Length: 452
Image (cartoon, rainbow, N blue to C red; front, side, top):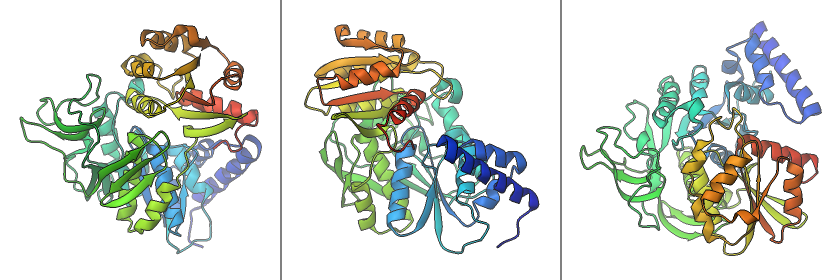
């Protein structure tokens, strides 16, 4: 047992009691115990995270899925590993995760902590610990009233990275905002060397269209989605950095999975869509830097199950319900691009909230390309959430048949609509708090066995 200050001991003990109480009686509460610990000892993270090899995952989209992919790969490699799988990625939630796994009897064995962290909270973590690896997935407009524009988000992340100069950075090379970031850390980039679509022009609603050096419009050898791709600037010569880990062939893309080759290795990613290829590629790169065997990485990605609310599949009386978290234009567009891979008829539900965690301004839905959904054979269209009327207007404007709309202010009606659906597959696209609330509703009705 190592030495520990009385204040830190009391902080950990009280937090552990809170965790036990909340798990027993409320099946959750992952932030509150961390707040208790920090109130008693603001530096408690330094103690509870001691001995871990920490991998931090941040960025706008893909944090939860990428975190779970990395966690499963490390776990399948035989190493001891913890993660904040409940999605509590703020400072108190991360402290809760470490406290929950802390033992007053020290252990010398290798152990990893794979931690998802909110973009604005990186600096609170790196103030006390120096992660072995920090990875940044991408940067898109998201909750503008909280984060600001993409450059503001980038600066918030870099404020935290600057505090940890010895951390290796594993970055998305196709993200133009992450090239030449001006830090002395060891840099590793991943990205696509090829893409099936020959599109070289980014959409007018893309988030980073102009060169970060000289403000001239970027040119692209290809665009994967939004502003990601093989970019370059004709004016100043700024271009995508060299990639150490790259998708060099896309063999098959379906609504269930993608089959690609990464650095020559055939990899099946058991999550659909280009954005999940990026998530799998990021996990491959991080675990490659950890020197985990390629067979273990490939096997884990092939058997990867969805995280809660991320392409999560739920059976409701023989209906296959797919819940997809959507929180910004880039992610919403990718969800739609994945759904339109379906060949048959399906139903859809749209849940739009404007709570603090969603962002209070919902005008971003007008930057989502709902018009693409017109190509689908959609039976019924269920609409709910605090801002259901905003969503209904947006979908009507996009050209979807308003005679198929069913608007409801409660989840009971949504559930009835799912049960009475003529189609076997129903997609639910929900903003964060709508997704959380609807899952809790399904959990209370016995359709979900595990809430987190």
